[in-house]
Amino acid sequence: MDFIKSTLKVKSIERLQGEADASQLRRALTGVDVVLIGTGEIIGAGIFVITGTAAANHAGPAIVLSFVISGIICACAGLCYSEMAAVVPVSGSAYTFTYATVGELIAWMIGWDLMLEYLMGAAAVAVGWSGYLVKFLHECGVTADENWVKAPWDFTDEEGFKSTGTYINLPAVAIAVAVTTILCLGIRQSAVVNHIAVSIKITVILIFLFATFSYINPANWTPFIPEPHNGKDYGVKGVLRASTMTFFAYIGFDAVATCAQEVKNPARDMPIGILGSLGLCTVLYILVSLNLTGIAPYESLNSASPLADAVANLGMAWLRILISLGAVAGLTSVVLVSLLAQPRIFSAMAHDGLLPAAFARIHPRFKTPILPTLVSGIFCAIAAGLLPINVLGDLTSAGTLFAFFLVSVSVTVLRFTRPDLPRPFRVPLGPFVIPGLGAASALGLIVTTGWATVLRLLVWMALGLVVYFSYGMHHSVLRTGKTPDLGIGLDEKGAGVDEKRVVESA
Image (cartoon, rainbow, N blue to C red; front, side, top):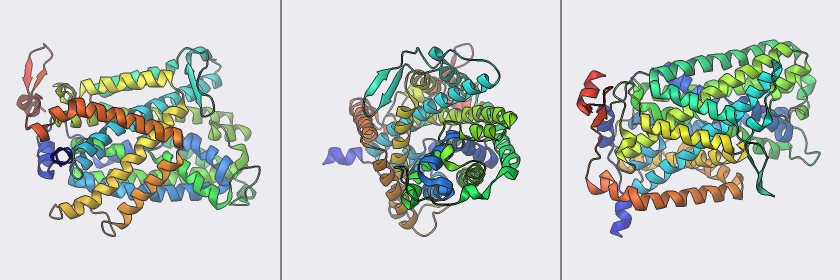
């Protein structure tokens, strides 16, 4: 019994807040930065791919309703993230929130689980980036050798893994390496690159909306909710099924919470960043869905590049090239934000002794967690180069939903265990309605991902438990009282640099 209690021991909010105040990470991000980081992570494969496939196979023009439904579900999770990020403004996101509410073992599990969301998510988007780059180069008259732009393995539920005969997805590896290099140079530089990428893709989306508006044929919206036909579930069931797909178009807003220690005023800017990015992306998704299903029959949109193909059918070759370019920029920012988030979770876990102390040390010049950034980038590059996008995407989805579930539960738990805490932002309608809806919907969507994905999630979590009981439990600061050696870094000449001097020099 004592053993179980020790693994469920929580970390005090005051201790977390003290660590945030003493952090070496530079507080350089504003509310606008946070909104754009969230937007950079959300707008990617969702708006450029899922919009078309979900409309063609499930919802028809009612894909608009699917985005509204999934947006509401994400807003529930977003409100929970906002309250927790305002109360606990420490890097680590769901990991930190659960550590403060339901205990160390669950916190370790969610930290381990988040690797699926961020590392596998970044790898999946890198593969998508490779595909759009190849398409863009083809539009410019350059044909890439398939052996170097496709993963050597494919996967289907019926046949499992099988060889494709190709070598490696080299462009996917290249974008992972390039983004990792940028992230090592500093949060300010990373934010600038993200701003540029977000600006490009939003500009391209707005151009698409204005350029295609006059081509909309209202007859394409009739019937708005098609009846089931051709063996496909349209109707209300199809709209709900499409909501499950479009939900994943919102994945990424939670990455904002991992940057809490680098935000100038987290109590104000974190809710603005999370809810602002969600609101902006929901509006863009609805507008793009309306335009897309208005300019082309919904059944013709089942392709990997529905926006580009739809405008090509209108004879707008220039816009097809521009959309491909926007997709490349858009997916770049998604990779960047995913690989921005993961090292900060590694760092938070190392501060707690659950990972080696080297993962928490901050580079004295760049003020970034160099080692976890490099480790994240290497694993992302390997996965992106070798694995198919469907496997990477399924793992990302399962990891994200599990995180949403635990954060929603954490809000309710913390309301009762620490009612005295100041809450600059509170989830409306009390501690049960919105957190309960968020938790229930996350669990429901996990089930719909299929048995193969659930099995992979269980295997991954079992491996995480082995790591925890063999290393993390024995080095936990909360359990042992021993503080990890985080005070020594290296200056440019290799000499020791103590933590106090690094903070003062910032």
